[in-house]
Every structure is written in structure tokens, then in C-alpha cells.
Image 1 (tube, rainbow, N blue to C red):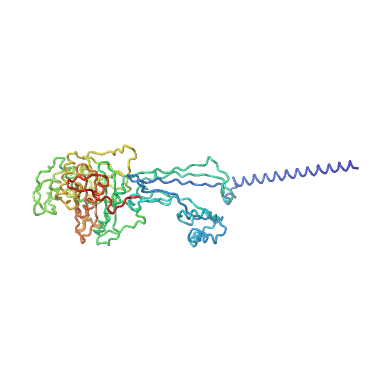
Image 2: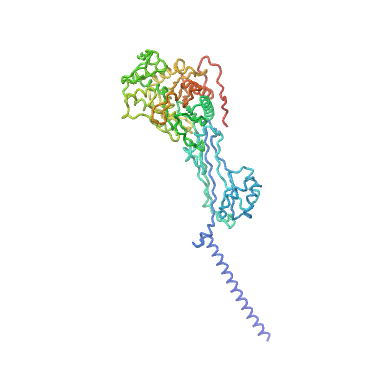
Length: 595
């Protein structure tokens, strides 16, 4: 009996063990199937489920730092730092109704504005709720542990020189791409390569696994150096703005260039927005919200140069033997000169018969007209092209134009005479300083450049011989007499021998053609020192108010050029070349050293 009982019990035990094993195996198979299915649904979900489940992978972007812009001496003009802005993930927030108040109490954000931004985006996983935060705000948010509140890294562009050279430097947009000026010109070089990392995450978006093969490090953008010197640039802008305000002018432009290397040391363009409109003014242009996005008119807007154009025709005619400096021309002594076509040419002052040299020194329109009629039209046109007018300088300034030059087919005897006096031609300030540099660099036309050479040789770019060195020196000496005996007497330097030329052209009417009778463009261009020129400076003052004072170029624009040259040459360490000069001019009067 006991044996049967034991056998029966053993059989029952084996049966229980078998069913238990079978049940455990089934549970294990079912569990494994569930796990496999979960993994499959997570990694490769059915198309019907994929849209709702979303991807289990996330990508973390590592922003690349935008390269710095530097001036010629390595001062920082524009730089980039990493900032943060706050965002909210509504799905992770404990209480959506109070999160705005929590952030307001924590870091001072506007609770109402946060609620306004979140309202229509409660189903989004990313709602930005702030601009770039201060460092203390970032630190408080990191320590707070608020659910659903995160920090997004953002690149921030800084301009340590503030508004100095703003138009020239430009700006960047929301995506940190260049929108204007040098920022746009050098965008490819300055922009780096963004890094990225893909990882598998859990339901709370925490990383679970990072595949090393998906990691791509960021590559910061390259730094770029401009030829602009911020000390000179700041002084130029302050001096130009002071003159514009004093004269109640519509605006003004100044360009400073090294005539040997072609390096642009300063470009200033100021429009007087506070001046009351005058009769005959064109319709005001739409205001640019950010002045950094405004065009730089030194390269985009041509103007009529007036008498500052005469040295080019004077030098060309002299070199080609059309006239000699000491030849006496039959210029009138009391009444306007009449050209071969009967056109009357007036002079501001009548001197009677005068030498060709005196024609330039005294800026006599009649003498220029006489010699212009000796030149063939093709020769005059060749002169204009050789000095670079009608072509871009390709210095790198965005939006540069070619100016306005009458085509060969429309060239008339009227044009021939007008151009010799600086009329019926439109030039940009960049074209003018490039052409005038011929007289300061032994007859060579330099290639203007806005980007500094980063190699150790500092080799100047290719230059073209326009006139012989002897002609350039002769023209330079004659323009020195302009400063001592001509229209530049009122703007001579106490330290340096300037050679230059003034210009006063009537302002063209915005509509209907012709010129205003009592509105002018006053300009002055000069170089220094006389023997070894280091600078060429042009100043253009647009529409100075005649009710306030004189409007002639030598009295309005000339003092600006003189002051800029005095300041810049002393700053560059150039010793005075006037025998009776005492000391040096104050380098930074009202300018301040850039940061």
C-alpha cells in the first residue's frame, strides 16, 4: 500500500513538475515575444503606429562658433559667444498653469508672455519663452530642477566697437548668417560647420545609447582681418558727422586709402536724417530698421566730382604733349570763354591769359575747356578708362557700381568740355581715391582692397602704370600749389605738405533733369606727405546749407580732409614735413581708443 501510494505521489509530482516547466516555458516564450515586439515597435514600428509613436532617436546639435572680424591691427570688430535661451516642453511640465509664474519668480521672465507663447502650442515639445538670458539666469534655471524647462544654446554676435563702421561691418541674421557688409562678403569663410550627435533615448528623452559612428564634431569658422583701422575710422566718422551737423548738410562720405598698397583704412558714410526736407529733395527712401544693413554709398552711389576731376585731364594732356605746364592759354579776363561750338564757360574768377599750370592751381574752367577741345574724343575717353572710371574697383565692398560715363555713341562736343571740368560724369568715392592714388604712387593705379593680406610678405596687389612717374610728380607739385596759392589755402595743415584739389558741383535735380541753381556737392581730395605720400583722403559733403555759411569744397570739405590727414599721419607715426611745424597734432581728440 505504501509502495502504491509513493508511486502515485511520485507520478503526481512528475506531472506537476512537467506542467510547471511547461507553464514557465510558455511564460518565458510569451515574455520574450513581448520584449521582441516592444523592441520591434520601438525601433521599426508599423507605419500605422510610427506617426503617433515618433522616433526613439534624438539629435543633439553642437553649434560652430562664427569666426571673428578683426581690423588691420588685430582689434576685434565682431565676435561670437555662446548664449542660452529658455524653452518649455509642455508634456514634461508638472503644472502648465503655474510654470510662467515659477519662471518669473526664478529669473524675472514675464509670466503673461510665457502663457501667451505656450497657449497655442501645448502639444509641441519645444516652446521658446525668452531671448538670450543673462549668465545668472542660466545658472538659476540649471539649479532649479523645474520639470519641462530647458536651455537651448544659441550663438550671439557682439560688436565691441559699437556703431563705428556699422555699415561696413554689416550684421548677421537669426541663423547667424551674414546679411550685409563684411559679414555677408565673408560669410563662407566666417561660417563654421555644425557638429551633431545621434542617440537612442527613453520616454523621458534621456540618452540610452550613443553610436560613436554618428558623432560629427563641430568646426569653428575662420577669423578674417580687414584693412580698416578702427582708430582712423572712429575719428573720420566723428569729424564727418560734426561737419554735416555744422553745415546742416544732407550727408557726407569720406574714404581714406594707402595709395601704395591700395588698402582702405576708413570708409565713412553718414546721412543727416534730422535735416528738414527742402524743396526739390527726392522722395525719402524707406528707412532701414538696422543701420548695419544700409548700403555703403562710398561704393554704390555715384556723384558729380566737379573740379576734383580736373587733375586727371590735366596730367593726361600734359603727358601726351597736348599742352605744356608753362604754355600761356588765352583764358578770358572779364567775360566767359566761348568754345568752338559757342558754349559759354564761366570762371569763378577771371585772370586773363594764364599758364596751363595756373589753370589747375586756380581751377579755371575756361583753360580746361580750351585744352579739352585740343584732345580727340577718343583720347578723352581713353583717359577716363585708364584712370579706372566706369569700372568697379573690386575692393570687396558689397553692391559696388561702375559709376556713370557717357557712352561713345552719345559723346558730343558738349560732353567733351563738360567732362574736362568734372561734369556729365558720375564717379564713386572709391573710384576717386583709386584714381588720385596714381599721383601719389609714381603713376601706378593701385588695386583697392578691403581684406588684409594674412601672409607675412604683405605683398601689394597688382598695380597698373597709368602715367609716367615724372608726370605724377609734376601733377603732385602743381596740386601742392593749389594748397598754397589756390582753392586749398584755407585748409592747409600746420604739420604736413598736402597736395590736393577742391570741387564744387551743382546738385542734380531728382526729377526732370538739370541742376539746382543754389544747391551744391562740395568735395575735396588730397594726399600727404608731399615727397612720400602715405595717405589719400576724399571728403564729399552733400547739399550744405548756404544760409549757414560757404559752400565751396575748399571751405566745407577741405578742413575735414586736413584734420583726417593730420590725425591719421600722426597716429601712423609719420613725422611732419613742414619746416616750421611744432610738435604733432593731438592724436585722439574726441576719437577715443577702440576697445
